[in-house]
Structures are given as structure tokens and as C-alpha cells.
Image (cartoon, rainbow, N blue to C red; front, side, top):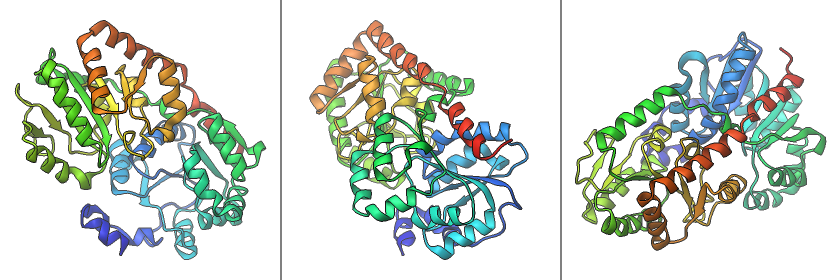
Length: 404
């Protein structure tokens, strides 16, 4: 019933239901490495590790699971038939047992924060090493897990190793039950994602078509309640820079139509990427209502606002924007990426804004001062370069439990 309700807004949820209950054909004969990444963001974080696994263990099948259809699409886009994709089973004993029988993993890698008692205990009983990779644990999430403290502790106690993003994540995970001698702070594997030359070329080509001289800013991964603030900031910006273009990228595809209706109702001159409407000289807002294109769209912008941070969602990852050398802005709710966002602020590569007025003011400053904007962006790129290396540390941990 849950999948059916979700499918009313996102029809892809109607497909492959049997996989979520563990049913389906055999995925791998034996010796597979299984990587679980919930959705698009986690798949992006897993990508550097997956590529390294393919190089290090070329004879082992790679089974990748996601929870969302958009995550599944991202797996196919990045890896195609180089990996095997299926949906992760619900955390029910029978569903988990069927999945493990179908996939026969010799190693399980769980990206970020996914703690499932039946799944973790089943791996432990079957002698399958399970590693939590790129693990993060916000204080808000930790409070939730503490409500089931005994279950959380027994579940995490069975984990073979944990690669935490930051010291604060490590401390919370240890407090929840991860043995200290099995945990290492490795940093964020998203720092290791390389920007393909083709991605830069695509971004440059798109920007050239829009007008290389016009100021462009992107509001990425926005949530309900944020678009109104963002559009008010853009309205203020247009009084100074009437040729400015906002690239608006809602986080969830089920909100694309409602955001389009908001733009229509407010009288914006806008175009939609999903139906290939061109960006004209008088286009004020470009609604990027597609999936899997955010990384390249960052490359088209002079400044980037990272969504989920003006409302209490906790923010989204700013690394992709910083890697492109794009100045980063976000709101006060950034607890999901507090360590990274704090590093960016201290490096002079990001700034916090809390209202339409402050957002418009900082955007005007950035878009009117090329030298300042470039300096800000270069500081972000330098931070990304300085933090590379997490995937190699993760691989060293993997090789301790699964020799080549």
C-alpha cells in the first residue's frame, strides 16, 4: 500500500515490487560484493568506491541496491550493465533471507546511515562481513536511534567495520554501540568523485547557449517552503541585474508539477527542461525538472544555493558545487552536513543566509564582482582537493576483511 500511494506521484514505484520482498531471479552465483545506496546522493557518494572495487576485484560480481527509483536510474546511468541492480528488501526476516540467497554476497557495504536490524543480524549469522561506509550520524538521527537503544546497540555491535565521515559522526556512532576498535574516520568519499571532461564540456556548452555574460545562479535540491524564499530573492536580484537567470532544481520529482504551477501562478517567465523548452533572453527561471543532471548543472552557475537548509531538513551535500569552483550558499539548517559546511565557511568558500533579503544581498555581491566570485570558488575547489583520499582508506578497510 505504501508503494502504491507513492506511485500516485511517482509511477516508477509501481515497478519491481517483488524485489522489495526479496523475490526474483538469482543475482550472482557466489562471491559477490553488495553495495547499498539509498538514493541519488548515496549512489554519487558510492561511485568512487564502486569504481575502485571493479578495478580491485574484477572477477567478483557487484550487486548494487537502492531504495528509490531515482537511485536505480542513477546506478544505470553511471554503471549500466557493469553492475547488477535490484531494490533492497524491506527489513523483514523472510524478505532479507530471500535477498541474501539470491545475491550470495561475500561482503556487504552500506552507504551512510542505514541501520536495519534484520538485515544486519542476518549478515552476522551468515558470516557476511558488513561495513558501513561514508557513515554519518547527525544529532537528530542519534536521538531517534537512542529511543531504541538496546536494539540499536545490538545491531551496530555486529558491524565488521565503520568508515565515518567526521569525528562528530564517529563519536555518536560509538555512543550508539559501534565498537571503537572497528571505527575509523576516513572523510567523505564524495570528495573523491572526479569531474569528467565531458561533464565540464556539457556545462560550458549549455552556458554558452544561455549567454556567457548573463549572471546565472542555481538553487539545488529545494524542498517545499524554500521556493517562495528563493523566488523572492531572485525577484530582488532582478531589480539590479534584470538579465539574471535562476536555475531551479526541486529535490523530488513528485514536486515538479507543483513548482511549475507556482511559477505559472506567480507570473514568472520560465521554461522547463523536461520538455526541452529553450532558455531565451527574457527567461527569468529555468525549471530543471529532470533527474540525474544536477552535477553538470552546477557547472553552468556563477553561484549555488544548496536546498534543504532553509527548512528543517538538514541540508544536502555542497561538495559537487564546490568541486566545480562555484561559490556555495546555504541556510541555517545544515546538520546533515555540518562538518563539510563548517569547513567551507571557515575556508571562505561558503556563506550562511537565512532570508530572501540576505540571499539576494550575497548573490548581488557575487554576481557583480567577478574577482571576488572566482576567489571564493577557488577556495572551495582547494578544500575539495585537500580532502581527497577517503576511498583509498575505505579500500584498505575492505581488503582487511576481503583479501584480493
